[in-house]
Image (tube, rainbow, N blue to C red; front, side, top):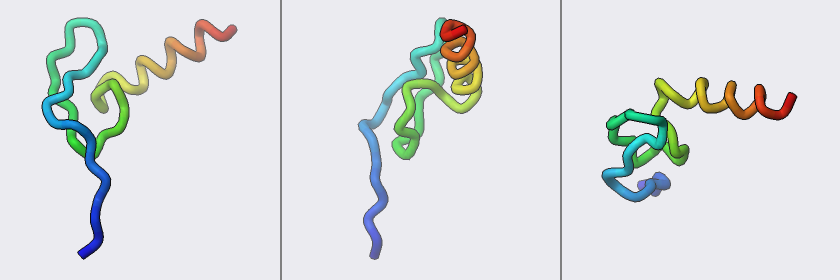
Length: 47
């Protein structure tokens, strides 16, 4: 059986006021709902 990489359990999204628990398969610091918003903020600040 192939091993699947997993991350620490019970991590919480770092987006302001978000309490969503991240999947053990999600290596990001934001949940799926906030990942795009965080990416957009980063690209906005680079301009």
